[in-house]
Amino acid sequence: MDKRLPSIHSVLMKVLGEVLFVYGLLGWIYGVTIQLTHPSWLPDGLSHLTPWIRVDTFTIISFLLSILGFFLWRLSHESAKS
Image 1 (tube, rainbow, N blue to C red):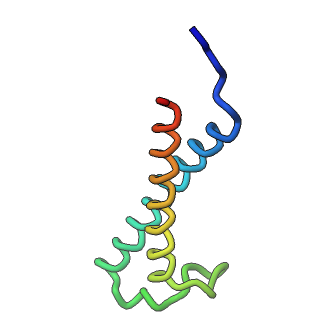
Image 2: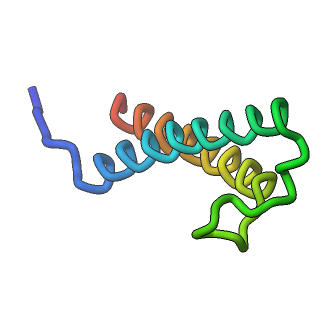
């Protein structure tokens, strides 16, 4: 029986996928919550530290990052099985 250690690339891909998926999904949920409760805030800046990114733009970017993270996470699981 061949017990090989997982490569650093597969571990990094799994961790990066999980982080992007979870935090991207949380950012998307935040943006949707703002959209439902305070729709007039959407064109405003995300915070006083990042006035250059709007709340609605942040929501879209977060959703796309969560899709990318889920893809990387699932890809790392499938490559670990084979």
